[in-house]
Amino acid sequence: MSVHHLPPQEEMIRAFTSRDAEYEGIFITAVLTTGIFCRPTCPARKPLPKNVRFFQSVKDALDHGFRPCKRCRPLEPVGRAQEWITQLLSDLDQDPLRRWRDQDLRDRGLDPDRVRRWFQKHLGMTFQAYSRSRRLGHALGQMKQGKAMTKTAFDAGFESLSGFREAIERITGVRAGKASDTKVIYLHRLETPLGPMLAGATDLGLVLLEFIDRPMLPTQLERVQKRFPGVFVPTPNSLIDMLSGELKNYFQGTLTEFSVPLDIRGTEFQERTWRALLDVSYGKTASYLDLARTIGDSKAVRAVARANGDNRMAIVIPCHRIIGSDGSLTGYGGGLHRKKFLLELEAGSRTGDLFTDRCLM
Image (cartoon, rainbow, N blue to C red; front, side, top):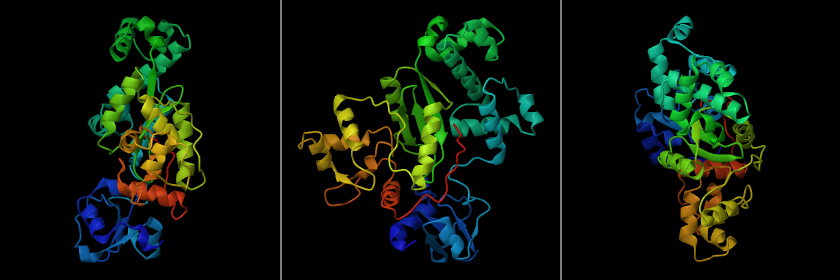
């Protein structure tokens, strides 16, 4: 790959020195004195700037004779979990109704405290709370299909109907008998070459796709819950599974238009803007003025820019295709270098180096 795709040298040095996660997938750092190459976020001691070289991809670093770092593991997809947690999450997917105890973890050779710390750090809840949420989410789905509450409760691993009622009422805020009417918003973490993303979907369509390190993510989650009153359940549904496959093909350069259904809700102006974004074709760009004209109000450039920034479905609703009238990249919530990567990908000048089907949340 040619060097012109990389950010300026000084910027990459700053990002590497500060371990800036926004640059994951943007460049690889090779160290001349050790012969290894690393992610931007490698925790190892940083070398002197004069001893580093930057490459666009893992392949470029390998082609120049560098070997991968054993600490940051640059050959693995960004955000990928260690093998022990990957297997545990896989088992949870296979049997979401299982009621886990600390001894079950010890029988696998896992320290319950270590498992708890991983889940709290990466998913914001303990392993037991995550497992319980999976069981409750499954139970809500069964009740929506008309399954009797008593059978649902015991199938979900609850020892008493009263305990099940209390759990349902705690997460839904309504009486258990009415829980079948509660809307469920499924959340799942997806790995991409540009870092982990959080996907959210109802039974009708996708409602969220954001980079997990985006500062605005908590605000977007609050907006989702406001627009789609219901409960968050940390498990994928069929639409998130569909999205995962389409994202994989997108980053490999073989998909130019997403077909996953979207559940678009915002103000009337936001919805007009977001639907206009969907008309900006793959490989093309438009300005904020172009977008304002498309929705029939050429004076609404600033309002269009705000709506563009409030888009909750990155990549799928392609706000990254909107640039300044002078051709500059302008702002992007996920980071300008991600925007640059996506535009270069769609222009056919680069592809994602790695992608995994393994999803973490």
